[in-house]
Image (cartoon, rainbow, N blue to C red):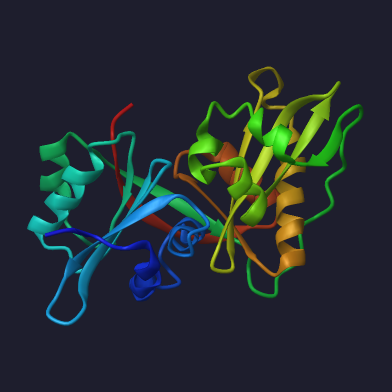
Length: 253
């Protein structure tokens, strides 16, 4: 049985998410109420046996003791609002549940800033572009087709807790990178206007987010599907290294 947890109790499920759990910026951002999302728990005799975090983006996070019945209940819940990327405890057999709900088993990769490693390398801003911090007007006019608005919930929420950088050309936002902040972590995501892709511009804005994370004492991270060679190469260029791979369930595209 899943119970919708009151938001003032969100931090009580923090113990389910160890340092090796993926996407901790998203997970802890919701628990700290810096990101929109909801938390469900499976009650135990004196505490909770498991929990599910559902963000307003596609990410859903399951943790704790998941028996087949609990897993089924969680998937039934998240399938009401696709698309989904369902992150679950690693080593859990999800094949039967995946088949039942028409989900695809996939694998993702997390990269992060190494402890005590070198800072982000300097990446020159190419002329005639201008590097700027994302303000309210630029956030509202993001080219990322509403994805960042779902992630952060509102312009006010983005400006209060998170940050981003963009490249402008003739006043237009050409490429952008945003940092999702939670629990001492920042996860970097980027989007470039289709006319300017494969030009290296995303290196500049992602490096700017990474440098800002270093100033704030946050650990920078990035995640992607294991076959996204360009995203992995970009992460290496800004000084991230491999953390681990992890299994997910996704709706086929």
